[in-house]
Amino acid sequence: MRNIFKGTGIALITPFNEDKSVDFVALERIVNHVIDGGADFLVALGTTSEAPTLTAEEKKQVISTILKTNAKRLPVLLGLGGNNTAGVIEQIKSQDFSGIDGILSVVPYYNKPNQRGMKAHFEAIADASPVPVILYNVPGRVGVNLQAATCVELAKHPNIVAVKEASGNLQQIMEILRDKPADFDVISGDDAITQPMMALGAQGVISVAANAYIKPFARMMRAMKEGQPEVALKLHYSMLRMNQLIFADGNPAGIKCLMSHIGLCKNVLRLPLVPANEKVETDIIEEWKQLKNK
Image: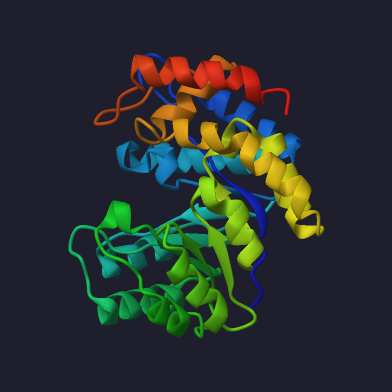
């Protein structure tokens, strides 16, 4: 099965009102902002969405709002994973997949499975899912790493079409790119190294940064696909400092700070996350003055 999630994907935030309720008007605004700016696909309820702090009903409403606003313009990837394999499969069975084109499933966190456990976990999910599965490797969050050899083995499953690689380990990423089947894709999970990953053979990104500055990010991605590496490299370096700043005090604290400054949402997070500190906020706003005309 071919992966349709290529190019610039957006790990959508969940905007909140001052009372911490979900701001669905702002969510509609953000979806239209990224689509109009050149996004290629949307990611609902990923890590950046603060999904662990949303109730089951809020998650349903967030998905519904994204799908309604998208109006089938772009493919939609749904974050659906966990550290209880049977529980994830039950979620899959109860999920309405109307308008959802794939799921993004994270390496199990906290209970730290070994490579055999990860392989069995993802194979069970892929067997149960009615839509294609993208693996999500982010050892900095989950505590264990999906090794290249395990990823390549999982790539042979007919319903596993890609991996979102957020390990930051270019050696590992190159090993996956070298050894993977032709119909399996690597997607960047790290804004700061997306351009180098594309140069190595990655096919897209799931971006936090592009929630705010979608236009230069999408232009960089198109330039890489269209054989214009000099254009892409210039854009890559123009965004490099901001890509660092928006993660300097946690995600999505930095991106919400910037999006609030440019009028896309309020600078509100749910505990245990808190807004970016004053120094980071000042630096982000100063850097935005340089970046916004790129």
